[in-house]
Image (tube, rainbow, N blue to C red; front, side, top):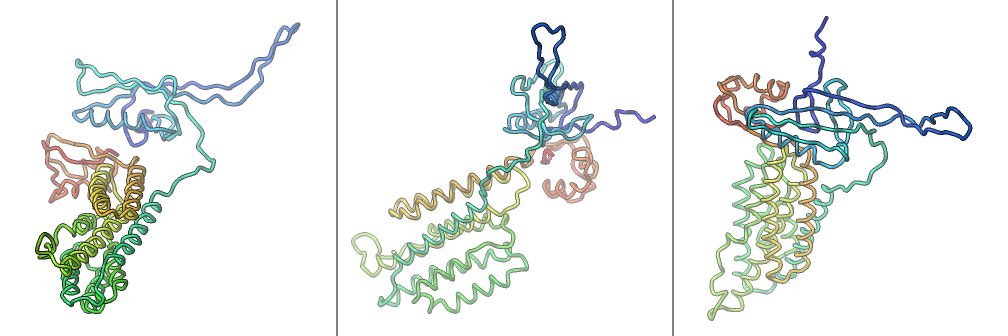
Length: 403
């Protein structure tokens, strides 16, 4: 006869796994006990099943037990019901018992182990309609609004009509600097599929003299080029650089101080309007890239979020410094929507944790030990830059996902 222990499920709560020593479950039926004067016996009115209560004596153990302990603590403190993989009954929907909760104990004598007393109540699946906010759509909408308001501000400030040719030429140099930066980055962002972008850049270059005479057409061309590439995760660094475009422009000579002239002041104003348009459009594109990026872990998503928020904060400060209240408010809304989207979409993603073996082993063996899933080998090797999947180094901390 097959040993029943071989049929047990590996225990997990949410995304955190653990071992189980003992397990208990209580249940029954609800009822109201009715008694009447003069009657020797009453009766119980059946009110349906009582919610089952599940108690587990759980543990995490090993050199990396603290990371596993923290991962389980994080899952236990999240709101709402979650999936529990029970050793005997498989996957069930539970909530942490609000009265008993959980306890954790660690002993210096045992070492490298944390023990949990977990108390759950089995709950029904939520089959009722719920209200939810489409945070991704909110980010895309706010980014579109920033594009529109940056265009409006540019058209109000950019002046070339009936002015000296060198003023248009100065604006042309600023656009040429942008084109150079885009050409340097296009192959890394669009890989082999950048025909459309290449055509748009060449068209902008050829038509630039005419576009400088028509500010609205110039804006449309620039904003069309600074748009989403095919691989948004890889676009983040380039969009961050574009968002800092204004800081890379040389100062227009004779545009400040005693020797400034009206023409040079106007040329400087045009440069600021152009660089502001480019920076804010890139900030909107960066936020759009963040909204559609498919992050595979919590840590990467939130590092990218911090970088994106830093860029938006710089644009907010710039808008405040020139009293551009419309863009200021729109950028504030974009910032808020982006933070809400990334935090909500990444909350249930895996965390990066450390994993170490005593000896060099094949990635297949590590994938099985960690996930019981051999398809995770490519992730293990690429995440740790391992040259050959047959030799994952031992004695070294490796980065793995805790699922």
